Image: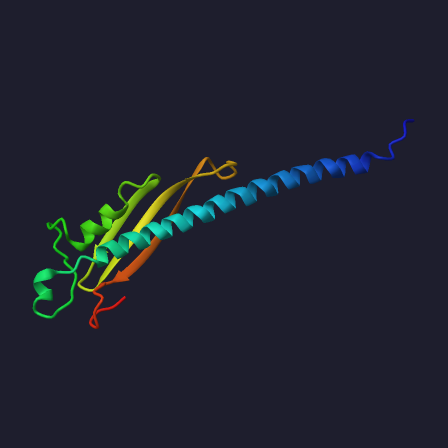
Length: 141
């Protein structure tokens, strides 16, 4: 019979190698997903802030600070919100809604994973809301 004294050590090393490679893949994909979510969150914030800057000028002259919610006006809150992030690469969908005091932006972005554990691409979403930005004592940030 042959000596099999180191067989357990070799098998343990092979198993540990597979576990370590799996953990590296999981951590790498997780990090890329977190960065993708952070980018989507920042893009949603920029879009909401852009929309919140669309103050209705006619209402402003009568001391009311409200957003321009006219959907046919290119300077309206919803249109400004959508245009703020339209040309950024990787965005799958942007959805903006506006009331007289707030703008809400939802951004969905596609993330390319370095190690395709769950597939080659995943989507992440973020939602942000901003209040009307006037710079005066009425309204606020």
